Amino acid sequence: MEYKDQDGLTEKEFLAQYNPGDYARPSVTVDMMVLGPKKDYSGLKILLIKRGGHPFINCWALPGGFVHEDESCYQAAGRELNEETGLKNVFLEQVYTFSKPDRDPRTRVMSVAYMALSPVAPPVRGGDDAVAAAWFDFEFSENMIRIHNDDIGVEINYQLSTKRFKNGNVKYANLVPVLKSKAQLAFDHVEIILESMIKLRREIEYTDLPFSMANEEFTLPDLQVIYELLLGHSLYKANFRIMVSDRIEATGKKAKSVVGRRMSELYRLK
Image (cartoon, rainbow, N blue to C red; front, top):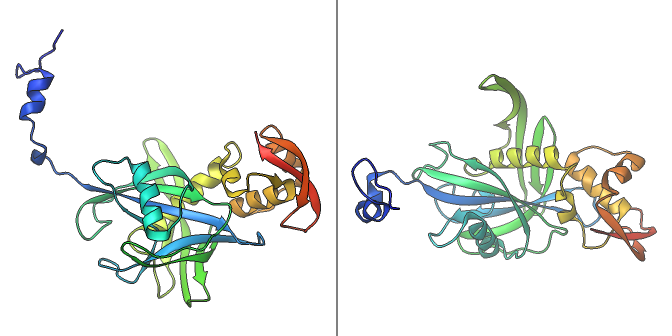
């Protein structure tokens, strides 16, 4: 049975006369927060690209770009990451859609943000409209974000304050950034980092997200340090092992841990 609308049109007839130009169509982009560990697991690194064109020319930014008409946002994220940095096959998880009307000075642009976790911080190269790509040391706490690369002399700092917002009958706290350095991140990318880290820390204990930053086979001391880096605080060894015990299995092999450099049992995600 074919249903007709209030104008007496079938769906086929409706689509034949439909004009997309009758409605404003915002552009859609994707932006990715990519994290990896330092080689010795002493801290985190974040991947940034240097913009080669307006707006925010020569500013550092998260990798990203426009979604093509023939691809999903996920496909666009993978493509842009490869085009701008050379990275392939990196874990991606959608974080949030950023849609403030003035977030991009060119036109109305909505961005679908992703977080990407890598077991290493491999060499990267700038490409496409990125004139450079580099890993920066990354520090995040409830009162500040510090992003710096001493080799190229760039430091970006934001002070964070807590403000309460209302959503229906619920009030919730959120972090608000204030720039405290000469250099800044392009667009609203500091907000993308904030939302990504909040989501990551909120979900870390009941998802497998941290395993994306571990090697396929890992020692428990190394896995615990990965959890601690992402959470921003230390964990009790016994509590940590209880937390991950039902997600891992022993391989029957041993290897030196990155931390401590001692021989330890190797495990993998089930």
